[in-house]
Length: 280
Ligand SMILES: NC(=O)c1ccc[n+]([C@@H]2O[C@H](COP(=O)([O-])OP(=O)(O)OC[C@H]3O[C@@H](n4cnc5c(N)ncnc54)[C@H](O)[C@@H]3O)[C@@H](O)[C@H]2O)c1
Image 1: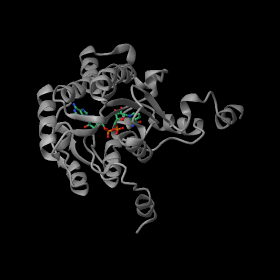
Image 2: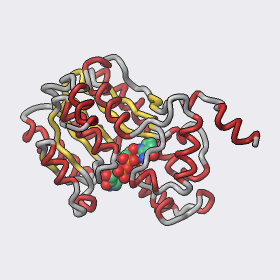
Image 3: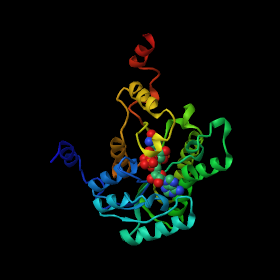
Image 4: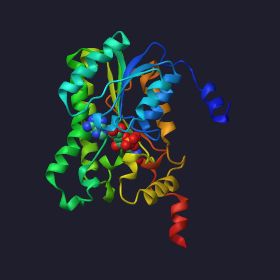
């Protein structure tokens, strides 16, 4: 058994035993959703994996499904019919209502096509907003209408601090994340009142994934964040652990929050390492 496996064994607390859910956004082994699926499985949770039909064709998600004993239902998170089908089928497969949902989806067409923030193509902007931000509302509305969530269930989406502070190369994703975080608060109110379900966003450190690396100058950016954060950057594995805690019964009264998971970056003005860099 490798050291890592040993650590994982020690770290399984059965926190999600008997809980069922849906995990969006596992593209490959670097994806935050992939790591989360592995951790949720280790903690005893059962789930359906989903991604856009186009992402399925790359085939890697089958490996994760096998490893975690889960089924895959393709769904474009911008398509209401797909989401309705996903929610219905997931409840059939899992044999009941859901306890957790992870929204781990993001994509900017302007970023992909190299369009600067001051030169947006607005049809690209609308598409990116639909995929990255409005999709969270669509996912929650589908769950809400189907009465698919159990009481004390937990819904989490991933975000980035560019929603609060400007990072020049984050482009229109900054605006999408601000919208996403607002949807978490607004829907969190109704989900809390009506169904005792919590809704939160995790604001994660820069992480080397397909979506992360799409941001221009990502390497400089991630190194800077590492030097600025007293605890260092939070990795995808760290994020998976944090998400497990938010899916568990240990965080029942945490809702409508944007939770910074960034090694302290967001509250650091400057670090000694960065001062030293500029004193040379
Ligand atoms: N990587 C980072 O630096 C970082 C930092 C903070 C927050 N986040 C957020 O974490 C989340 C997950 O991203 P990641 O870094 O794991 O990258 P990733 O590229 O592995 O995941 C993004 C996922 O979104 C899916 N997706 C795209 N369009 C979709 C659609 N129409 N319907 C359904 N799914 C669709 C992709 O197939 C992919 O699985 C995103 O919300 C991202 O913005 C990432």
